[in-house]
Image (cartoon, rainbow, N blue to C red; front, side, top):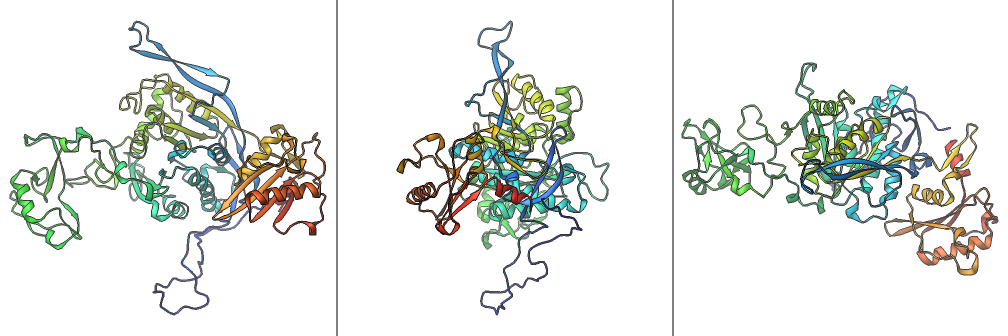
Length: 622
């Protein structure tokens, strides 16, 4: 059966036993010299398979299995449960068409036009299903923003597991999900991962490997709670939010901004030009003539720019700004120079990430660009849920205000938002109120008891908490609810098994090819030679493109009561020639559960015929 690792765990990486020597290409090299390392961990090349306790939303007994194991690769069916739809009515006592109120109807028939989706089930298998669901969608119908709040260590994901596996299990769990997220994220999309000090720095290295270090945009520090009473040596009241772009080259920095906030502007000196806010007068060190002494007339102190920086303008331009009352020296007039920026100039232009941090740190006169300290905390999130449910229903839920900041920065109305660690449903509630489409996954009973009940209140306009006022949310909309379906294979206790034929031959064939990253292609015609005149029995084809090369997989299955006989040499040759003519692939696989009428040495070298599910079960027994 699948192997289970035991043993002590320490930090591991590629070429751990070697040292690194920094040198130029011209320096002398030896035969044993190799390139510098990337992150590694125990069983990095394996995947994790584990049974799920649905009610608790926990995985038990994780096993290391091959990353191509069908149990972690297959695209399971999404079993429709119901649609929750808000129906608008005129509020009693109001004029028709003026004030609306909503009732929630539950529909038992699926509707392809409804795009908001909640899936209950393991999020890795759900991602496989989502990947298949999005495979034929245009780019704009794929997620623009991914926000995930994963377990900060595997203690929250598994029970009764070897403690020595904690880091390796967590890294594997995250890696397998992030790889798929990277595939399905829009090319101009962003991913936000919120973590604490325990996991952030390992995740940063993992993200660099999957998304590319050049796509790292920043580590945002969010003050997640105000209390520090239980902290020991230093305050642990902050979380990290790692932010990456899918492809920074296609993202426009000018679009990554918030609307300017007039509340932050004031006019303490009654400037006739109106409200203003003070910006730093120093800037990155561009050229020498921008460094000079600036005299503070209030204190008599002369200021130079901070180390490595310069002033914004030449001295003659500075003197003009000073004469025009555009220069101030802090709130008390005692610190270094700052430049007035007026509301009339900021209005409509937005606030960029370098100027949106709003709280003052210590006695600084302008905000620290490393902290989100102005947002609600998990305490606010907990209080909001208690108001909705009348009791505590979830530990440390994220507040909607945090998601509001994220979605305003990285998306527009109508964009898709994905969250595969749904938790209490904050991402879905905030996305809905902000008119974003959303896709969500959660495992465990709180998908029903918390997320769905919370979203019903959002749809009905009865949720008055969180960002309801700031987003002017009144109610409306709909979403679909699915359960993750059964596996396409059934493994008996004695190790024998077969396909799960209750899912149907067509679904099994499509899911099998999708699970191995083949794109289904129905354009090929096998009718030549009159071997496949019955469309029902035609093989299904999947194509995989790697660089300039193609691999093609063909699957032809016989159902338990099917009428397909042995795969004859003539049939195999017809499949081979037709595929070769259309795709000119580097390699062809034929997957079948039929008998094979072919001598191994009589097939072409670039063709492999694989008996399934026998090969799957043989792999599982390794």
